[in-house]
Image (cartoon, rainbow, N blue to C red):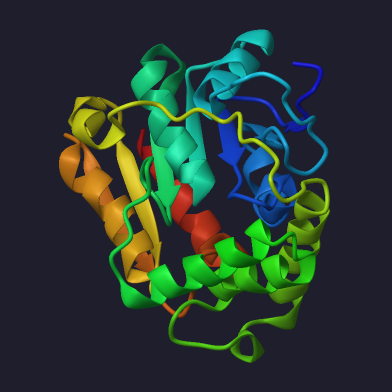
Length: 258
């Protein structure tokens, strides 16, 4: 897939790292070298994100992951996803089960996202209003609310994490404009079909993430036959960036147990 940028390093069982919306593969910089010591690690930028191209035709992220694995002649793979990446992982398991051997999800579970919590609804409204107005700086700051989560300010988060997420967000958001048509198509009926996922699913919750984000991942775990959840205390929407050593240990234990 020439319009999809990816890192491909290490050897062994394939592990695909799927980033969140408006960031890119660099959110996994603390995971890639650790996992690559024992696995083949594939970390793509989704369409319209990071260094990947912007699609001119309708597409589905799950189909992109499947096409990438087939092009690389590998799989079944363990898919590890945060936020949008978690939803993509679930959708890929539903649409292309032969290519998936396990899922690690955090901060989401499927599309459409389900929001009820007042903090999440307000944060999304503020962010979406800035994007609709073409306000790049406002869009970035609205997006950054999820780095802190509902119980902290950005001043309470590691400055390095804040800087990295802001840089990734700016790179992607600056490539898009207000009123740009969305050609992304969701997989249908994800929530109703989730019980059909046969591979093991591990949810890694950021302990102080948005309640809605935790609940969406938890709902997938409750739906499937082989589901488990763990929590990384003191982290919000990006537990892999805030406490990478803990996240890496959890993922490595999951991989060894498969």
